[in-house]
Image (cartoon, rainbow, N blue to C red; front, side, top):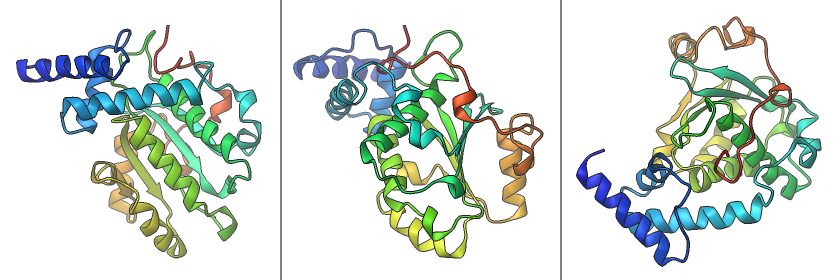
Length: 247
């Protein structure tokens, strides 16, 4: 880390204290995610960090969200956690044809936190470093109008942007049907440029080959050109993320 970055991190820590909070227990890799998300502006990064701390305390008072708190969202078995990509990022697959807009928005918010926390935690080798990223795969094959959930998709991306800064490495979207293009246009208006730049819509064979190569055949399920089986997220055992940290 160069001196300029080191100085800005120190400024961020001081700004967090001025806001009545503390960075104690959080390593520089964690703080750097907030710095990068706020264009290396210490005060803005500090503000984002403190807002995140308050959100975690309110949203995740137990430190993590257990399966028993999100039973209805888990029972459709629409989220899969496949292991680590070629770049050592955990790969989460969402099969949208198994999803239906939630009637319980509180449980859906908890579900987003549950799946993001668990996916990130699956990358830990004993403990969290703080700069772990994830790859998301949104599979739209066989979706019908009843599966379309622009609000849910926007919420997921807004959680990533606001509360999981710099956690997204890439998001691949597969099998986008014609009627979903207008939905995606709407969703895109809620995404900042940094997030949009990480999204890849697979629309031809060359892009599909690169997707398979980047993710890795060993962990990609057979349905997507790999050699693995789909692994539902509830069947994966991980050390839970406890309010942004593992202990």
